[in-house]
Image 1 (spheres, rainbow, N blue to C red):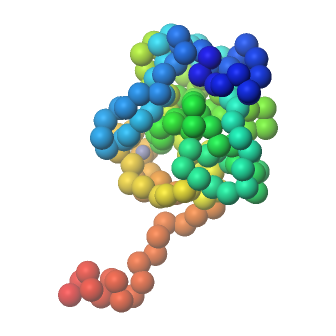
Image 2 (image 1 turned 90 degrees about the vertical axis):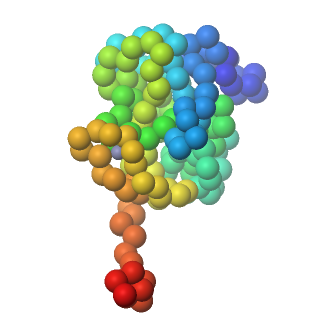
Length: 154
Ligand SMILES: [Zn+2]
């Protein structure tokens, strides 16, 4: 199990033989890779963690003021604008959106769960519908102030 025993003994918790948090590259940082294949619509894991009141790195939003801090598994899911997994933060489950071959990184869309991101960032997922700049679903793109625009243009 990737989770410490204190989280309980759910047989659907991610197994260390099936998943690992690994460094993808310096740019993307760490991500979660799966070592076995999953079928589309399959529930691939149940997730757990500590429920905290604020957004942190490695939290996923449960509700407006509750966030799941999971530094063992789901907190390391990478973002893609064409994700291969979907999270249900009520049931705390992860479902495959497409057939996922073994040795694939798991990608969620951060805007699926997050109203606001710990940190917005430029995306390099390469999908044809890439949004380019990733925000939470309640955040707008950053608006450059007049003075910044003036400085950039002059
Ligand atoms: Zn993207």
